[in-house]
Length: 310
Image (cartoon, rainbow, N blue to C red; front, side, top):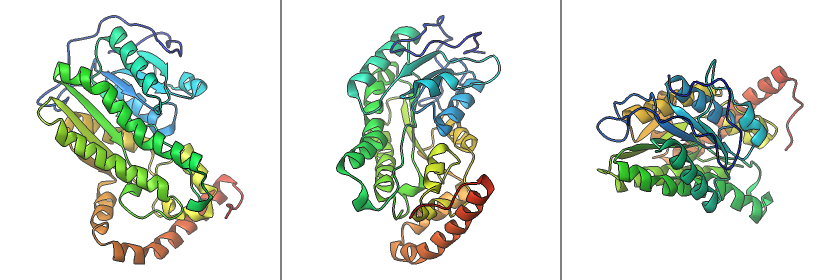
């Protein structure tokens, strides 16, 4: 299986160059219908909860996984599974256009192509909107939205030249419904969804697919950050998803080429339908927030966390 190695490559601005891989993979459009064995897959935010799960899932499918992120120690700790190691590891700040150019050039030089980009890097910064400094707001927007745009911009020329590729953006149901005390985060995720669907239409017929995976809250260190803030209760209206559920959806998007995959499907569809009736949705919010507050209390008690801060 592609990607097997006795040792992981060093975390560098450039990375280990493995032997040439199998012939290009893919089917009708992008990688739709094709096997992932041997595909070169770049994952951003790979040191985080969703990023790690996505990387492991892709590696298990035989992809040659390129881990990227800002957390060097976290990248070193990513375990892809027994006998599996990343094809390359690169430090990458998704907000930095020059860094994107360097990483993409290095991957193309080392591995010959990029078949998949999973644009997963993102942050949350909950709190009353007026309490967030302009710098914090810019960091949120640049990481969650501009980073996704820069990543797609960097890989598209090579994908179009080969007539094959898949870009998957990781969004959030928070981009479909109002998120009090996380308004800026919700805005970035709404924009990521619109960007993915619009770019998909733009590149139609090129052999490249663009999809967005839209999950409910996921059990990650970022959700633990939200657990500290009472006002973030809406993020806990439903039980948090395991990161592996998002990883499965990402692989499904790559293989099936769907424009959007909601996770979970039923809850996501409900959120999307409710978004068409904002007055009703806003009327329901107090009930949803109370439900979330009760779940937060149980989760804090179960983890030994202290009561949240207002």
